[in-house]
Image (tube, rainbow, N blue to C red; front, side):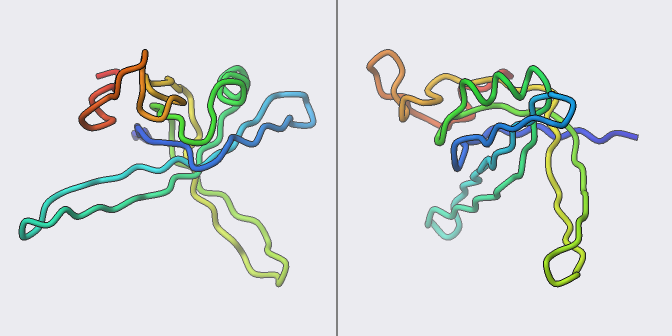
Length: 128
């Protein structure tokens, strides 16, 4: 079976860095991916938010270099976990457990790279 996810998007907030009881780095963040299209001549847009968790060395790098607004490529697997909420209800969380992360150009420069404005889709800068 295959469980693989690839996204390119921007961080909605600075990453939260913690450590497990064994000392392994864990970094959590939310990444937005936006899809745009035209319908009846009007631009349409839909944004999806993805919970992403990094472990180990990738978590350390993500915590050190990614910031709110950073553009990055993430590859990993989908995982759903559950926990008991304050009222006793079961809460389910689906997240991407990242195995790879690549910082893409313009990540923290607000769309500017080397003083020039980047144009086109942010996906044009991807590793593909």
